[in-house]
Image (cartoon, rainbow, N blue to C red; front, side, top):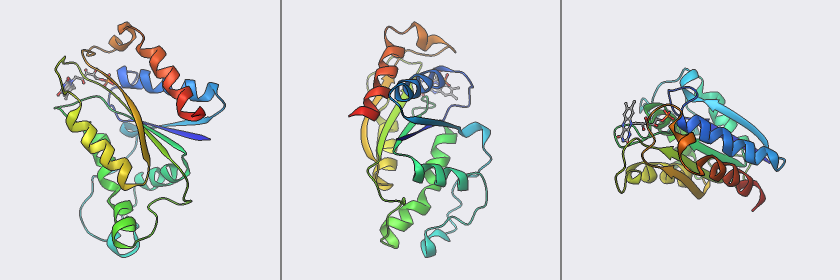
Length: 190
Ligand SMILES: Cc1cc2nc3c(=O)[nH]c(=O)nc-3n(C[C@H](O)[C@H](O)[C@H](O)COP(=O)(O)O)c2cc1C
């Protein structure tokens, strides 16, 4: 069982990084092989809408996204972590998702599976936001659920914490780290 963590925050060692690490620690404790991709360390551009992918389902831009496509295909579980920025996911995470237009093209234009080998894949979302307002994650959830649906990954849940702002603040949130650890265990055992 391979669990791929995608760290979408530009802040290294911040709140979503911490939660993601705990999710992966929980999964590893149950025997899963885990790997984290740090989007801010990769070099890739956003989708240029060149439509080249409509022909073969392959993005012609030769940057670090080529590695991300491979990792997505290999994973059994994909955990996307992104804090809220201006009421959405980070630019890094959104650009990665937009580059999956090539996978959209496979599925809807070329009528082939977006990810191969074809297998059951699970998706999970981890997010925090500094504000304490209802529906803080509403817009992000639409994007993330759409991403997983397009690439045939079953959305299995999320961990979302409001009022988490300063670096390290998530550790003060009661039970957040334990919830993350348990979520990681559950992702690979259920
Ligand atoms: C550019 C930027 C935009 C932000 N926008 C929001 C926002 O719209 N809503 C919110 O609740 N918090 C917002 N925040 C606060 C972050 O979500 C918060 O600090 C979070 O804990 C950062 O997580 P990280 O440590 O994983 O990067 C924003 C922070 C930055 C830097």
